[in-house]
Image (cartoon, rainbow, N blue to C red; front, side):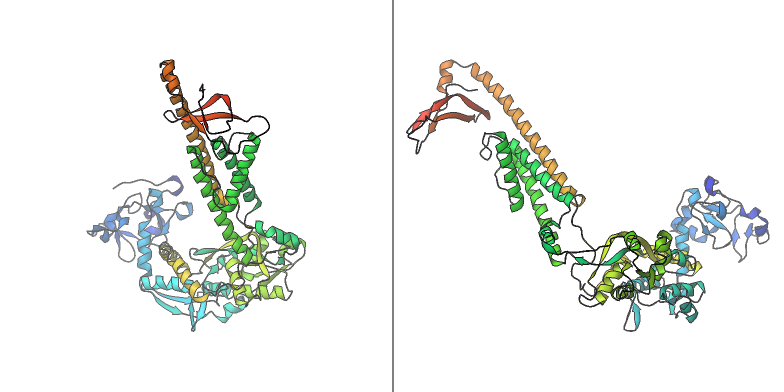
Length: 587
């Protein structure tokens, strides 16, 4: 049995030496242990140092003991311990910690499970949620992703559930928010748990404890759209699928790839010898045409060129596919924007903001200028209606609430509004709960969430209760794909360039080595024999010019044995009929 005093910021203590504990416990000579209220018998020094103390637990003597039986722990001073700790189930005034001894608290998990088993619990519900799927009333019953998720926990631990209504006192305390009213009901101990997606705001956390978060809501500014019209808006529409940075990146990559291909393929059938500027510009044209046609406009002849051929083809395919998808989305939706794209802009213009009463305190803390401009509302639908009626010109809403309010407004009824700017606020969704249930229920929720239970419940609820969006692709303004979104294909293209250049360099080096070896072999041969091996080039002339200077021919050919390229040092007059030319010298 390992012993220790724990870490400095959460040291083990001897609670049995405290006067308050000595009045409640006593040494039993007959049993040879410490007796505590309830009749439990603890060994001497129980929990005063890091040890397993397994002898005090009968279940640790079983054939398959729980995992916590091998973990060390000790009692700690709760007010002076900064490590994870928990209240003792035997003596609630004492706290223990596994973390100070270097172990995880598996015992508390087992305790949570035992605590929840077959327990009766009172639950209450607020009104339906603005999201349209997290909490809805269907066939007279509360359904949605949160009730489904919690019902799974109730079934797992065989809990008995009693639904109790929220009292009129709590409703009167918060007439504008049934959710805050339900939190107040928990604080009054009128119910044990409120089920729904409650924002755990600072105001609510001061009223009652909350469970662990299930997910987070993000809040945006909602403004009226201004449709971009005129010749400039029409001309700019084909360029909206990509941001300017991405357009520059695509153009730059196309030019760079084209120039690399030119130098890799220079002198081949696609890019004959000539003025470098002309050849490079023609290569850029061919590369651009390949990108626009989504098909390569040349056949590579060198190894490096073939590598670049495949790499640039992949780059062009991804770019065109992404552009086509984003363009289709852009053409389906109306091209909209907003004159105001930030809270500060709205405050400066003196505009009124509609927003949920539950987040008012959080927003005013960060934006004091909203104090005289904020109009609290009960839900997202009321906020959008107030905008239409001129009560407020802007709104601050959670994204899922805004989208659901647009759907419920009917076809095009609320499609003249859009989410603009960056995220204003992020708030977690949890549930108010009775204090002694907080830890066990949070543990059960985390355990069930780890298996994807809530995500599955949310998907099913969306399918069952959420109608298709009536505003097309409009909603949050899309600025198009950025360079960062497609960085991976640029990395692939650049990698292909590097490998292509290295491949040609390697091929060139190999050819030079073979050419030098071939030159040495030929030097050892007799001159007559060398002349007999000179290749013959047969030239067929059709339509030779009848006037003007006589055209000349420079012969270029390749020795197939050495893969080396040779050029004749002499030029030959173009014959007027079929004839043969024999180069006299090779360099």
